[in-house]
Length: 356
Image 1 (cartoon, rainbow, N blue to C red):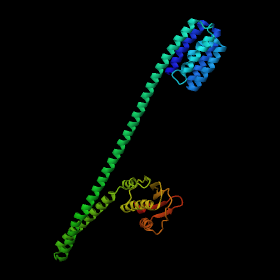
Image 2 (cartoon, rainbow, N blue to C red):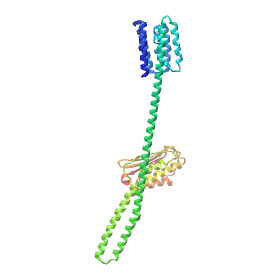
Image 3 (spheres, helix red, strand yellow):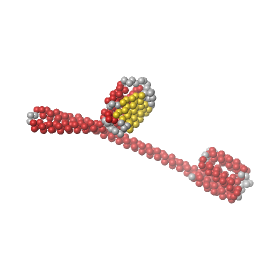
Image 4 (cartoon, one colour):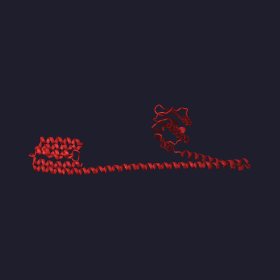
């Protein structure tokens, strides 16, 4: 925008100078051509194009001396470039047409040219300042985005740590209840049963039966609570992500699209299958990329583990690793498919009714 304003100021001055020295009819052609040239160079903003246009304009000045009045406007774009020394070519048409261009007009053109240099220098400084500001703004924006991402990452890590600590505490509480309270209740039930067996008073025996039944109900309630605590004490996503993040043999990624909460048996099975599959990759494959995906469908839970490697040695279908995976899949009535035609791929499907 600054460059365009500078050119407009120069054009206005040079048009006034041209009309003052020439007739309006003689001024129209150079005015129209120079305006077109300035607009053309401003639009494309190319140094080579500016140079060749300037050379062509110098040639036109020999043919049409009235074009000399607009030389400052044409060489504006060459100022402060690698080819600015060619601006000295302007003296050739001035010398050749010295009688046509009066001394006063040459003086005015020199003053205009000097003013043009000052304007271009000011515009270059302003452009440099603007670019520096934009670069600094971009750097600060990038740093701000990086900082926000770091804060989000730290927040997620903190939430994961809190979640893991909460789950561990749940597991500890469930274990304490099972080991201590459950043991005490079981002992109490056995003692009451022994007392009932030796008591001959019917009323006392009935009362002890009621106490025993109450303790049995309490024991069942505690057992259900402990099982619920234990089921919820394992976050499958956290466990899988920990396994994948700690896998350093090759690049590994986790795709987790599961909304339902699997039962404890299914969680342990999935975790064990993933560990065994990743162990097989280390032992038998030269993979560079690996992905673990867990998807939920309307009727199925699907586990897919695949890599892009080729087998260093053939894996036996009856090997311990594959057999371990097969047993865990069969224990949940799942379906296992293995394909090594294009990388090593494990496809496992579970019926929702068997894992929820």
